[in-house]
Length: 426
Ligand code: LLP
Image (spheres, rainbow, N blue to C red):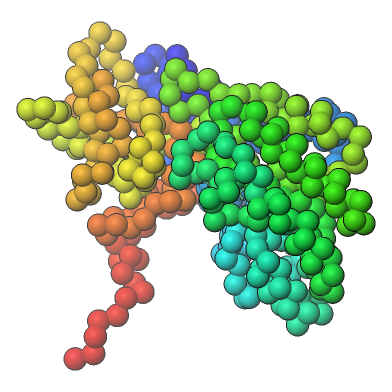
């Protein structure tokens, strides 16, 4: 039987495997909690985008720029770079990371509302593909920094099409009320300003409306608005060479959910772009990594209660923050299933001193202390958003590739957590 999202995590004789490796073997090698990724799932997820783009005339000139924020492990970045991907970054740190992972700077786009002068300088010196500029003030700052370096900065404006992505409010970004982008009504005037600044080169239009969209129709609505802007720019002699349509395609988190195919998301967009000769950039994050990863954890104690039973595990909100932060649902599955065994309903909680420290609530599980559990769909915004709260070393990360296991991040030691701190002098 398969688990949510990917055929690369599946049961064989009641034992959960990652590709050819039983998860229990990963626990034996690395302990818990450990993030486990499937190389085949990661590759297949990227190739699904590349295949649809390659199959459509409007996708002939296109680039998938993986949104690094979803999971920035070097091994994952390197794998995507080898498969031809570019990267969407939001900080100088992410730029350094993608270059260390072997990325081509000419395939990097730089998003984010608060780029510092130092980050702009770093990206100009690296020779990135495009800055996705989010305000008038940023245009001016970038022009000055580029002037200082004697360069021209390639830019897109991130426009805010005011489309409702119908997703969680914390991850909606394209509404008027969001801090992101510039209102589409102001974009024309800002493009005219950008075109007049001597150290900027207008290249494209950028738009990202939100994350975890399970209905692709808002993407089409946003594209319609972007195309109106593009036509208005063309009549004003500001040529546009690429459209960056952002990320946001959702994944299946619950057993009963369905997710739109990459084809059903991209094809209507590509049909609409047919004949325009534009380069198309996409910035998927979650869809490439979310269901290619799980969090492996061990049950420490069972704690029966009056109103609730708790299964206390060795992973916590500091390892996977999404349930605490967004009330997000992740399937939680026994690594070893015993057919016919009795289940009980548990809140699956970590050892952190917060009531919000749960990874799942009201879950029917057949577990005993010492058993392994898999928290599914944890490849995106899992490790990337983890912290050391409660002086907890962050989880190890392992990548399975067929019948091989690679450690792609060893577990931190406690000494490393306070290595940068100093006691006061006597
Ligand atoms: N491009 C831009 C400009 C973005 O802001 C984002 C995500 C992406 C691309 C990638 O979006 P994706 O394809 O992954 O949906 N921490 C939240 C998600 C925050 C998304 C932020 N921006 C979560 O755990 O659900």
